[in-house]
Image 1: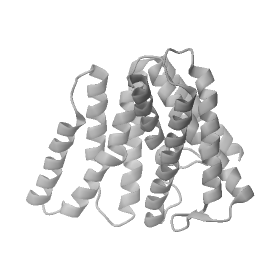
Image 2 (image 1 turned 90 degrees about the vertical axis):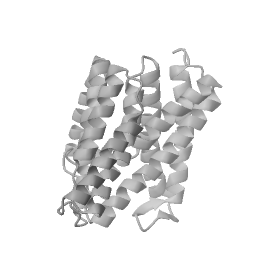
Image 3 (image 1 turned 180 degrees about the vertical axis):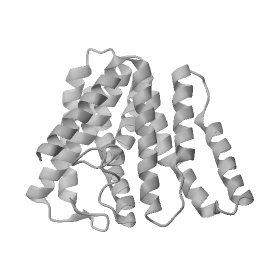
Image 4 (image 1 turned 45 degrees about the horizontal axis):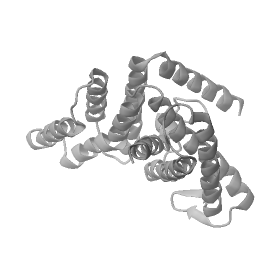
Length: 267
């Protein structure tokens, strides 16, 4: 437990420092996290006896971060198209690159690549939008996860996804969702003077949706680990696993919070 507490304090301290220094370091942080997540997913897929390379994921994350940093109005889709063509062409002209392995390598463009690209877009925004979106998504997911754990321990009777995560329960998920709704109310009062015009019920909806997607994201990441027969993606963060273990829910919760905030401020 002591190791877990120390490692998460160090991780959060480094994260906070990089996010608060300025826009360049925020995008750098996204780049680092994206590349590590691609490596984590590659490691998991290799446990399934596939010759997966993380390089297409690295390149996609690096280019999307560069495009975002430079402020170029370029969609990530053409970047993905070039990488898809390159990977599939390699499977045609080089025997050692099997088509199935190349397709699995290209899957990193979507998970986690595209999700990291969305978070990079959030981090590139001016204040207060970037930190309101980040904190709304992250707080909703983190508190939902915490209360889902304790709620499941106290009231859990019905399994939520026994094939993937035997310890998660429907009752725990409901407790997590309720905690996220309360979190939304708290966030409204914290951010109501930032200039972002989202009503209190809007924050409640945003937090509820973000936390729900976060719970599903957690299960998605767990499904890969279970199929690969591994407990954690890596041991990068002692007691917590790898970057994918830490960001599994946030990859979905943060983009959801950002785009829903945009929707509420536009409508």
